[in-house]
Image (cartoon, rainbow over all chains, first blue to last red; front, side, top):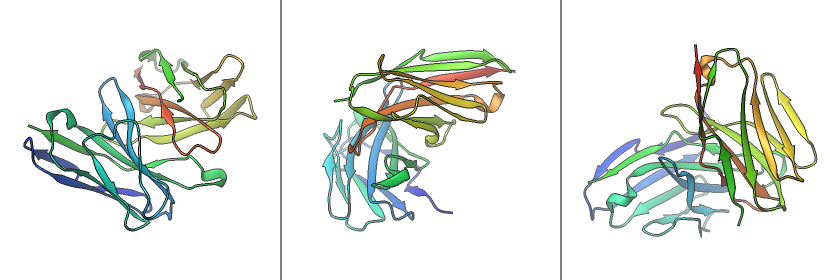
Length: 115
Length: 112
């Protein structure tokens, strides 16, 4: 099925541990995004990428790193997890222009708990 | 940057009634306004969007209206059904900008 796939779906970490969330899309989208969703806070942009090999900071980038080595993949890394990073993380992708511009396709989410 | 606010935060409606969610935005340069629906345990999904060259758009039971002068846009759901229960997010972005500014979301509960 075409779409955005996130792995893993659930993860529990201890404070200070590191991990990587993987996002893969098969729609040949140029743009990819990582959001976090917390109760009452809506969707906040962490980092995004406008193409292979490029990344940029969003609204809440501190404590996270990203890489876009392949067009279809966008990785979100936590080098030293903190309890404040307990959240649900969503990856999304979109086309750059035309009718699909700014139309985001979201993954199902990755729930991360940091103890 | 763009700031989007949604009201009310929670809305309960009787099945069959209409629901209206309103969003306001701050950047007069914004020209694209989508609505996303998020069901429990799933990612948000686009349900309808509108660009600034039109004032209203309909798709079966849902519609979006835009008032650029007042800088607000609204989602209208008619003949609500239990499957309409979800969190709805509005967003806005200026032309040429590749980042959407999302509102905090509205919880809609349809009471059977």
